[in-house]
Image (spheres, rainbow, N blue to C red):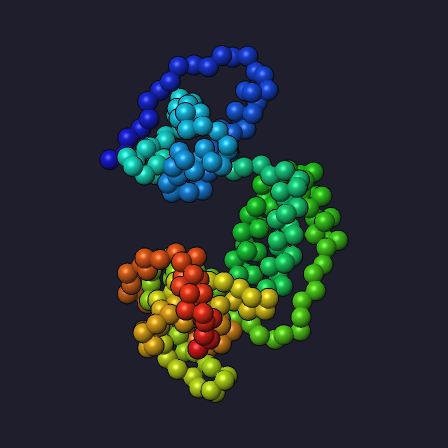
Length: 253
């Protein structure tokens, strides 16, 4: 059962280099808690290269500052449901990285990804400081990425991502140029990866009773169903290792 961590004694008021470093770590830990549903002390200790005891003290310090941190026995730490930290302020380098990613994504072959990222990046830009915003706008005007002339496009990445994370079955109408056949499939989305030109979905195909890789630009129609499937109990890395052990690549269907 989740429980709120107890209070700890106050720290010394004098600020030195160690205090500054710790403050930076506390802020980063809070960001990690906001980002992940549950995170363990071991994960935090490895990430910040400190001892477990240091993480325990940091967690207590955050709780003392009013952050409602819960601990789930045997699992890790999480923030109380509904608690949100204020928007973070980006450094100029971080903002530049976002602008660079935007330029790359705008050349992506999936229209849904472009649309959703554009909405997200506009919200991020709205919280940038004025001087940083001016500099990122300048950088945006001075950056360009060339893409190939391929006309292959898709518009299903965003909805398939949602189906994958919510374990919803998906019905697709899929065209295979190799056989010039179009088939109706009911699939269980498992993972998504990209090549230089295309997005591919790894899914368990109920028609073939096996995992298959589907190119998104070959999906002619897609419908997410309310019906859910049981999550597959392997990781993506384990899936690739299984494919490697079989000495074959995942076939495109």
